[in-house]
Figure 1: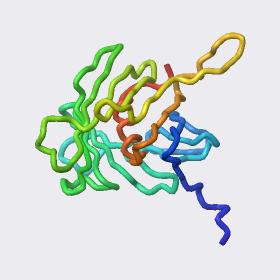
Figure 2 (figure 1 turned 60 degrees about the horizontal axis):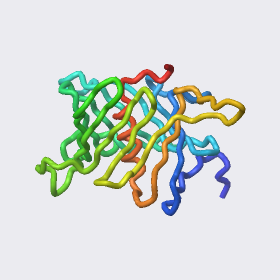
Figure 3 (figure 1 turned 180 degrees about the horizontal axis):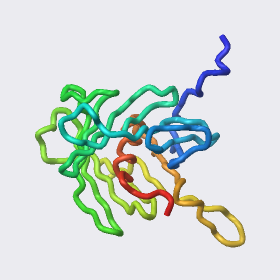
Length: 200
């Protein structure tokens, strides 16, 4: 079977850290609203984000959709008027498809923190399942599950006589072994950098 025209399949190795690269734009790709894209070390698209406004809701919620390399919707993210976020399975927005909700607990120039609550047995519990901490300006975000680091973003730099940073519109995302739901990580990264200008 000839698969030369098919998009590359994303095969994660869960025994070693996985590096992906986040950028605001990518040449040759048109996405609604100029959403984020996630590529592997070879430049292949792994995930991308479409950015749009919800026109079906009675509230003017901002909507982003995480898609895989084939364009299949994985998670739809809504930012609510109260400053919280919700993630739904696929292209859905019904309560039965709710995966998680996110609340920002700290927002200063140097520090931003979030708590993530997954839908499940502890849905009514006040204890969060994940925490996100970092500084969006420095492209620094660390996702914690308990005391363990699930994933981390960082600026990149070029080696030479002087250490030079790659432009801030592109940075690295490292997902550490032991966590298999990479789509959830991508959705949380999208929320962490929501509303941030990537060209400065």
